[in-house]
Image 1: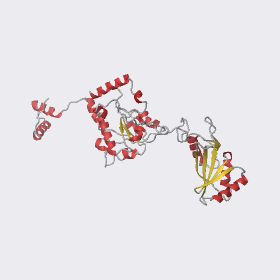
Image 2: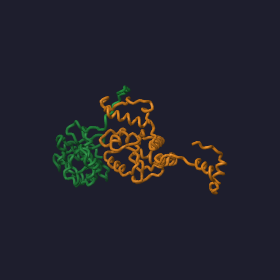
Image 3: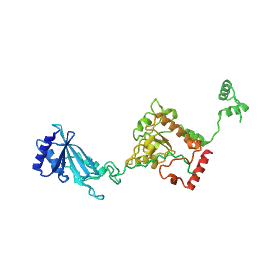
Length: 172
Length: 222
């Protein structure tokens, strides 16, 4: 786990090779995170994967979050691990909501990490985030004809309203 | 027809005479009267159906641990009610126990299983989830299995005790034999006290529907 100064060192090295790709860093509860420009997330992931001395070459999880009402609203999280040093780093790409009709887009990292194939489909299924260049971006858990993105925070909870009236009056 | 009560010893003597072929005339008439029960074919058929139900080997969620799995063990022993033969094919099964929540992706599969079963067939909604979705008021779960298939009996609980499932099962047997249990509203004449989830009195049935319902209820009571 890189500590806070280590995270800043990583940021500086990325800044040298990919200028302006990292927008900010966050070190919270011993979790190092790089907040990156969504247009350049592949550059950062490739750098972290291939750079000698870093070699975060295992994508342990790819998931999304909806931070409504914060802006930008969506975030795609990439959890990377270096398995030799057992160090983890998180890469966050914040995505703005382009409006009700369009879907937010980000580049797919299936070329870098083949394990992302199913996880990007799951993110697409639940949040409606489109991964450009994904080989087969279809729904994975919900039925194919399902309408809506059920894990978004503005998605209705669903079910049926239940009211308890305690009324025993007769309706005759 | 009055049948004279006789001692076991006398009956045994008669039975031996019958086997020898010595029984004739009035004795033979009495022998037959003592041993024949008259009924209707439908009653015998329903009696046989109720006492040899073949449940489908089928589980949906956590309730499956309680129902099809623990019910057939020696402790609860569904065989006492003639339903120990669990069938792995819906074409051989009479009863499908919906043991758990039905997700919207599973609902077409469950419906197809039900459609593949041969008549007569029965459905038990076991537990809160398949009866009303229980705590899962969300996008993924069907809000009650009776939204897409007919359900004969509902067993409440989360999960129900195996004894509760057995009780529901015996109620289903009585239903099959044409003598369904009266609901508490029927027993206490409490119709019209229903609580409405939505709409209040406006969601009460139309006069025509209420009339048809009343007639059906009188037929049931008759």
